[in-house]
Image (cartoon, rainbow, N blue to C red; front, side):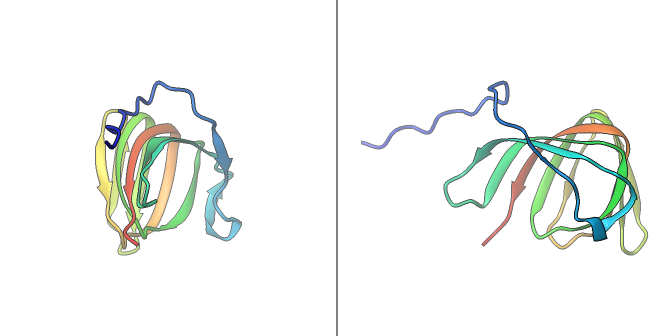
Length: 119
């Protein structure tokens, strides 16, 4: 008899993964990124956790669909066509696969994320 999948609480401690955007993608600042990935489903297509970043601006090219909910800070996403959207604490949004533009952190931020990337 298969086991019932368990609920994943984001309050559980997970190891932080620290990184920086690739140097050629950075347009301003020296952004530092931290991820606490709480969940990866078996096929490796769905992930969820907490992400934080320091100030900076860098180029993004999304191959995944990402739901974001900002817990702190302010960010601006600008499409390559020039559409600019600003988000702050408490805001939720989706970045669809295929989005190309920039991600800018105006104030150090922290977000909940849920990512789906089809294989």
